Every structure is written in structure tokens, then in C-alpha cells.
Image (cartoon, rainbow, N blue to C red; front, side):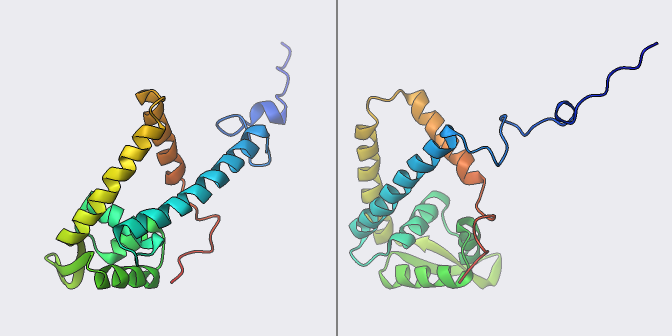
Length: 175
């Protein structure tokens, strides 16, 4: 009986999911890089506008903390730092700024008296909600020609992209 022919190395070793490897920088990856670059520039500019709409002295980076606190309710600063992938010193500066503007407050953590929970103040919530609602109305106008499933798919894909993290691109948490 003849022996079966040996498989070549490429046949025996399946490629990565999606049919490309990390050295394959085809047109789709160049287009992705270009579109993400434009998207991030616009997002940074928008973040500044949103922050100033909440309070003229609010830093754009701190706006994301308001978003997260509104979504989740009271959180520890360390939990927020982990979520955003930043160091304690960075969160501490942003929290101090938000507190000084009267947008958030601290309360003792009932599960650990040594820790504090951060939450939006009533005024902070009102200001944030007004800006968020205006932003959503703007998105709705800009995406009026899109079908709802397309918007859902975009949100799903952005979530998937954000879930990849960025540890390989950054040297680690910094203060």
C-alpha cells in the first residue's frame, strides 16, 4: 500500500482567523488606519467641545469619567483607572478637577470604609445629561440615512475593537 504524501508546512499549519497574518498590510488595513486616524482626530475635537459644554473649565479627558459614572453609578477611583487603563495619579488629578468643579462627590464605600465611591452630583448629572442628550440628537441627525441595523453593527464592531485593548501599544499604566 502506498504511503500518503506528506502535507506541506503551509497545509499543515492553519493560518490565523480572518485569513491574514500580522505582516499582511493590505489595502483594507491601510484604509482602516486612515479612517481611524480621522475618527480619532474628530473624537478628540468633539471631546473638548463636550467637556466645555458641561463646564468651561472641564478637561476633555475628564469628560469620559462623567460618561462612565452616569452609566454605572458610584465607582471607586481604582475601578475607573482600570476601566480606562490609566494610573492612579491620572485618575486622582481628574477626580480632583471634577470635584473642584462640583460635578462629582465622594462618599464612603459601604463595603470598605477606607475607600470612597465617586458619583455625579445633582448639578453634574443635570449638566452632563443635557450635553449627552444634545450629542445623541446630533448623532441621530448625522446618521439619519443609516438603517438601525447598520448603526447597531457599527456599535458592535467598535465595541469589539475597543475590547482588544492596547497593551501591546503602550508601555503600561502611567500616573
